[in-house]
Image 1 (spheres, helix red, strand yellow):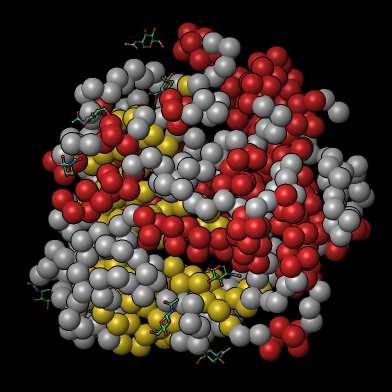
Image 2 (image 1 turned 180 degrees about the vertical axis):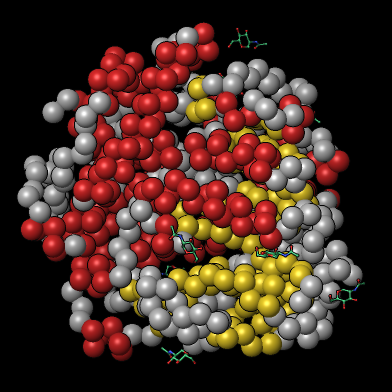
Length: 516
Ligand SMILES: *[C@@H]1O[C@H](CO)[C@@H](O)[C@H](O)[C@H]1NC(C)=O
Ligand SMILES: *[C@@H]1O[C@H](CO)[C@@H](O)[C@H](O)[C@H]1NC(C)=O
Ligand SMILES: *[C@@H]1O[C@H](CO)[C@@H](O)[C@H](O)[C@H]1NC(C)=O
Ligand SMILES: *[C@@H]1O[C@H](CO)[C@@H](O)[C@H](O)[C@H]1NC(C)=O
Ligand SMILES: *[C@@H]1O[C@H](CO)[C@@H](O)[C@H](O)[C@H]1NC(C)=O
Ligand SMILES: *[C@@H]1O[C@H](CO)[C@@H](O)[C@H](O)[C@H]1NC(C)=O
Ligand SMILES: *[C@@H]1O[C@H](CO)[C@@H](O)[C@H](O)[C@H]1NC(C)=O
Ligand SMILES: *[C@@H]1O[C@H](CO)[C@@H](O)[C@H](O)[C@H]1NC(C)=O
Ligand SMILES: *[C@@H]1O[C@H](CO)[C@@H](O)[C@H](O)[C@H]1NC(C)=O
Ligand SMILES: *[C@@H]1O[C@H](CO)[C@@H](O)[C@H](O)[C@H]1NC(C)=O
């Protein structure tokens, strides 16, 4: 096996192993030699050969150069901006099987609800509020079992070698992945005006106000999906809420789920006009280092979340100084692990609505389109609001989707801000494509290095560019090693090669997912 292929397969192994462990049927598949030694309880690891035809033939030496420059563990997910250690979490019966518990035991467990903070728009029939989340049961799992399962997700690290607080977090997160999703369940919510600090403990609230009413009970009109998800807009009663056509305030409601004391969330009723920010989280609001797999895993799985430099100061200023600024946090992290994200955001940044990756988008191909799907939904819900879009260059889906939104929804994208991750972190050796920005007005976007670059910008009046930050942009692949970047501008041959390299890595992820 070529070193390149094995390097790529290496990164797919956690996924393969996780899946194989969950699915005993994997034993029926002809096993190939596992590439890492699984821990004793996880012996079912199998990987199927991924499709190789035409990949290396097309790109020859250039690819090897890029791959070797990125290090040994070549993350297929970096190409998509989505960590593959957050792929293929168990759904349906898989978790139950892997934990070895029977149906009677499951029946006896209490039901839990993950309620994700929603947004609502004003329509000619009143407020229309999006409810989304998941209904599940948390099985009791021994620490030993949790450790085995957690080790599936860690690269080059055994949970036993982590500090006790990190062990606790890794177990906590692992437990939240191995939950039993409940299909065909009815969900009922009680709405109440939310005081300044919402029920989920969040601070601020992006300038939102506590309404004078809104009390009501909502029976969600559809049963949960086969994966326990619920996600739909529901027309709610006014009951003392301010009409969206007579206020510019964002009104904040607490949403309590009946029968689950961890199913609380705050919802935001957002009037038709005004400004909203849609912000990614990893490597822009917190230090993740998605592009360095081992670090990315530890930062996501075991270590406490840490804000990226003084970004909280920038958001706090915007929350205070821009009237009725709606904050919407959009991450493609799977919903099972978003409680950590929400806890961190609401302790560190202004309160706001939230989007995460629903379970029916769990396969890799859907993963690549989820961000656009969620972004389109927000834009379609607020056709008159103007948006500030925030993320970093290490997400190839962002690099494609953000400029596309400016084209799909003319006049609605006020500013696009992208942290140039490689400018401040030489650990990010991953190339990114700026070609989507070629047709955009240069005054509407900025690549920046540190949060201070965003200071003093009057974004409300369309000042999106800090003239002291040099924008020396060519519209092509950036950050390629060995001078390929320059050549790619001059010689399209290299651009084609590098595009197909990214395509290859994605394709291999897809192929692997299909075969596993
Ligand atoms: C706001 O909309 C409601 C419902 O469509 C309507 O009854 C009301 O007259 C409108 N108010 C204003 C100030 O336009
Ligand atoms: C994870 O930790 C949080 C905060 O301590 C706790 O509320 C939650 O119940 C834990 N989740 C699991 C699955 O253990
Ligand atoms: C959900 O509600 C429907 C309609 O009221 C009812 O027929 C069904 O039995 C309920 N399902 C559960 C699991 O309670
Ligand atoms: C996932 O479910 C949502 C509704 O909950 C639906 O709109 C969407 O099309 C589904 N996506 C996929 C990939 O099945
Ligand atoms: C959710 O709301 C209920 C009812 O007010 C409250 O008892 C419970 O403590 C809340 N839970 C959380 C996690 O905020
Ligand atoms: C409100 O949001 C829904 C769901 O996205 C959308 O279909 C509808 O057009 C929006 N209504 C208005 C008046 O913007
Ligand atoms: C990002 O930073 C790197 C390193 O400073 C630089 O070479 C590159 O041109 C920058 N990219 C953009 C889009 O500004
Ligand atoms: C521009 O960036 C510099 C350097 O980070 C910062 O000091 C300054 O406040 C920013 N804003 C403006 C409007 O220059
Ligand atoms: C705070 O945000 C406002 C609105 O965009 C801006 O005008 C002001 O310069 C910002 N202040 C700082 C210190 O960044
Ligand atoms: C802009 O980029 C080009 C090519 O990457 C380089 O030759 C030039 O020196 C850069 N200009 C500035 C002002 O950084």
